[in-house]
Length: 122
Length: 107
Image (cartoon, rainbow over all chains, first blue to last red; front, side):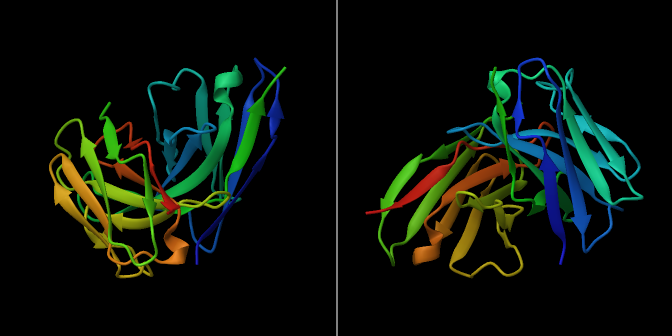
């Protein structure tokens, strides 16, 4: 059974860099895309970006200028960095795995971590 | 970006009710539509992928239908553990986008 466990700082000041790490247990990073998704308080889910085991990335254009997702296959982990945070970045952040169902465009987030609340406040 | 619009945003329901939630995409997304259940403080749970395929372990009272721009999630007989928020999500093209959610509340 695949499990994702994430951690990182929960309180940041404006202009600081958010850093979260997600460890994958019970499965390999290989052949999957690994994602970050966030949910601001009282709002819906927003996809941030993804990374494949070969290091290739795909980011939401709305955040692309501030986001870096990286992968460490030796530790079976992947990480998110979001630079220059502001109050609007306050959210619960989730890491998740994408599984593919055989045709281009056919995929879903099948495993998620519990989420980390990150608050940005001066 | 493809916009996903869910309705209703909330629904007062009772145990045993048949519940239907709709999701509309701003453009044709074929059948590349997924449904998730989200309870407060928990990880979202994948219920249905590719519009109608039930994820392993999900009870058969959940079903999905639709293609193109209009999709439906149906719960045939609401159980106590089904009171949660439900999200649709398109995987047709990046950036992957979600509906705003439908919260099921007890009447």
